[in-house]
Image (cartoon, rainbow, N blue to C red; front, side, top):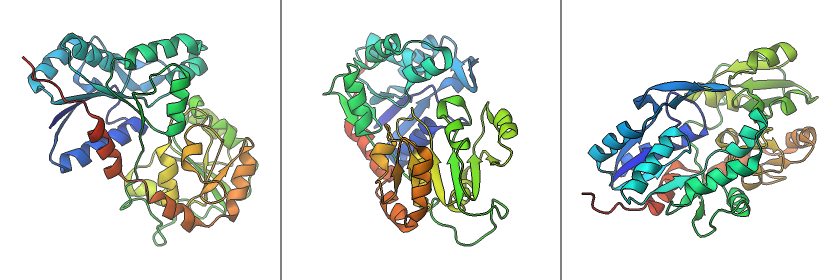
Length: 340
C-alpha cells in the first residue's frame, strides 16, 4: 500500500507528533508498505509565532496537489491542522478522495494560553476540519470523550495508543552518571521548556534531592536564572536521553494540556514512576499507587512516588509498542478509489 502522511510537523522537529509518526512510518515500511511524508520542508516557510522552531508552509496548495497527484497514494492520513494539513484536506475533498485524520494537540487551549483567544471558535474550526474524515485517531480514551463533548462524531473518533522503543528505553545500571553526582532522589522533567507545558508548576515545588529539566525552549534562559538550583540538561536524544531518564528516580509531568505524553511511558520503561495532575493523558497512562500518583497537589504526587517499586513501572510500560501503534493506523486507513 502507498500511504501518504500529510503533516505540518516533521523532522528535524522534536515533539510528540514527529516521534509518533517517525516510528509509525518505520513500522509500516518494515511491513512492506510505501510511506511518503508531505511536510513543510517541501515548501517555502515562515517561523510560527511564539514557536519559531516550527516552520509554517506558505501557500502549499498547488505544489502539494502536484506531489500527491504524482504519488497516487492508496491511502491518505492528515496528522495536523496547519497549512499543509489544510492543503491536503482540500486536495482530498476536491478529488473525492477518502482520508483519515489524527488529533494530537489541544490547539484551542494552546491558542487561549498564548493569545487569549476563546476556545469556542477554535473548536468550531477543529470540528469542521475533522468532520469529513472517515476516522479520527486520538491518543487516549479520555481525549476521545473530551472531543465528543466538544461535538465530534462519536462513531468516527477512535482511541489510539503510543509506543516505546524498549531496546533503547530501559534501566542503565552501568556507565557514567549524566547528572554528575546530583543527590538522590532525582525528580526529572522532560519536554519543551515553554509556558504551554506548565513547567513552572514543577520548578516551584519544594522537593528533597535534586530537580532536573531535560529539553529546551523559549523559557529556558529565564527559568534557568530564576531557579539556579535546578539542573538544566538541554535537549537529549537517543541513548543519551534514555540514560538521562534512567539516572533519575521520579518523573514529574506537570502539563495540563498534553493529549498523551510519550515521555511518560519512556520514563516508566526506564524505571521511573510518574507524578502528574489527574488530567487527560496521565489518567490514561498512570496506575495510581503502582506506576505513579495523580494529585491536584503535584508535590504530594511527587513525594508519594518515592515509595513505589521501579519494576512496576518497567513492567507496565511493556504494553506500549510502536508495532501496536502502527497496526492501529493500518487498520483504520481508508483505501483510495482508483484515481483518474
